[in-house]
Length: 247
Image 1 (spheres, helix red, strand yellow):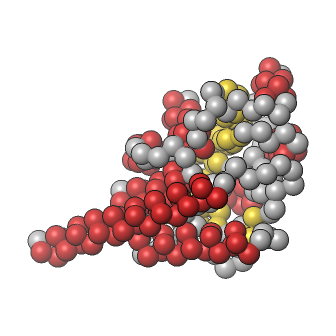
Image 2 (image 1 turned 30 degrees about the vertical axis):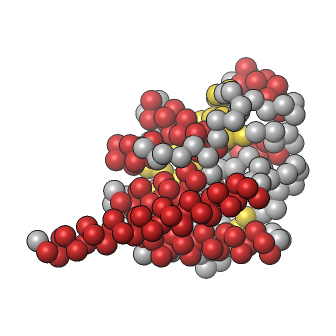
C-alpha cells in the first residue's frame, strides 16, 4: 500500500536533518516523505529545498504563521489528492522516534482501526525526562479527553497513522482550528463520526535542539478551549444517546 509520512516543521535546523537521515535509513524506499515548512528562518528551509531538488522528499513551503493544525490539514489534503492508502504524521523536533513510527504503521496494517495514536500514557508509554509541568499538562489533557469521549486516548499526540478513507478525511479537514487545538478537536470529531481509533504506547523523547513553539499563552488557550469543546462534545453525545433510547 502507498504510504506517506507527513512532517510539519518550523525552525528545526539540526533536528529535521537527523530525522530525515533516520527515515531514509529505516523506512522502505517506496515510502514518500512530505515536509511542510512554514518559512523557517534558521537555514533549515534551504536544506529542505536541497533535499527536495534531489528527489529525497516532497516539500510544501508556506507563508509563516499558518499554524501547525493547518500544516496537518495540508498533509491530509496532499495524501488524499495523491491517493495514498496510509498517512502517518510525526513531529520534526526529534521527540518522535522512527522506531515508534514503524510500530505505529505495523499496528495499522494488522488492525481494523482507521487511526492509531502513539500514546505517552498507554501502559508502557513514557514522557522521557520531560519536566513535571509538561507531564501534568499532558495528563490533564488526556483526562479531559477521556471524560469527553469515554475512551482513554492521547488526544494531543502528533504521532499518528491514518487509514485514508473518505469519512476520516472529511472529518479531519472539517476541524475548525488551525493551531495546536487541531489535535484534540480532530479526535472529538472522529469519535462523533464513529471512526475506529486505538493507540500504542510510545516514548516521547526530549527535544535535542531548539525550543518548544508552545508558549505559556498557547498552553492556556489550548487548555481553556479543550475544556469547553470537551463539554460540548459530551453534551452532544449524551443528547444523541438519549434520543436513540427514546426511539
